[in-house]
Image 1 (cartoon, protein in one colour):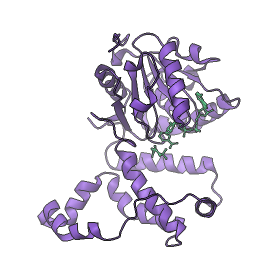
Image 2 (cartoon, helix red, strand yellow):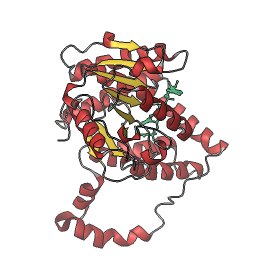
Image 3 (cartoon, rainbow, N blue to C red):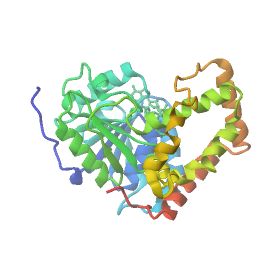
Length: 323
Ligand SMILES: NC(=O)C1=CN([C@@H]2O[C@H](COP(=O)(O)OP(=O)(O)OC[C@H]3O[C@@H](n4cnc5c(N)ncnc54)[C@H](O)[C@@H]3O)[C@@H](O)[C@H]2O)C=CC1
Ligand SMILES: C[N+](C)(C)CC(=O)CC(=O)[O-]
């Protein structure tokens, strides 16, 4: 086991966060950390990255003002660094949100672990790679963790935190605490599972949706309505297990399982992913275009953000985290 250097500061004392990769998720993290009053340094190799990032932060800011900013929070506390090394030089915490490609993540995380100050924790936003696979070849891998967010990270509270085989458990504990201090709801996993918890659940639903579109069994619009007008309303405040316990009436989960258990063996799901061929790709894209109507991407982001805020407010969870 390599020598473990403690983090240079306590999670409560973090002042500067570096966000590496500033697309949909990296940009969302930037907006979140700025709103929570941190100094943020971002780095992204794309030529148009700074423009995109500043647009994303400006579009998110009204929602962030609505839910309440930390003292001193301001978009101008964002610095765009010219190089990766400069971005992380003074960082107390690093959030990596580069494209979901295993080789890229591996070399980038190794580069980050070499460029940051000793002990600084580096979290990857990966949607599903186990950290053990991503930390291969990295020196200082002890402080590499997964911190998987949900889009948009500045509004959806959940972060799933888990380390890899070479991660120091202290780094996992440190990052879970840091995310809590930074206003997130944290699930800390004690073992690796590809896709973590939420994406394993989401992907099961998503595979089934794609099968139904591929087979012409349901439209994109009907699939979306089946969730927003149905189970999605319950899932905003009660998870699928407790929700189904209520399906068993006063007999609870025991009756629910006895009653509906046999249907688990019915062909209600296909589980294997469908082939993402041209026809399915076109059907999904056309269906979403139709569902969006004349609303632009910015219109949809604003509607989604307001919807999340309304649900959080209506369920008494605005500004409150899980613990
Ligand atoms: N889009 C989503 O809903 C979610 C994505 N994630 C994860 O977040 C990460 C980023 O995904 P998105 O933001 O959706 O992708 P994106 O395509 O919107 O952004 C990726 C950004 O990384 C930049 N980039 C390219 N090469 C890079 C490098 N070598 N170093 C640093 N940055 C580089 C690109 O210029 C781009 O701005 C992925 O790991 C993804 O799985 C996690 C949760 C949700
Ligand atoms: C689509 N996605 C798999 C990248 C989604 C996530 O990872 C989490 C989310 O925001 O739903």
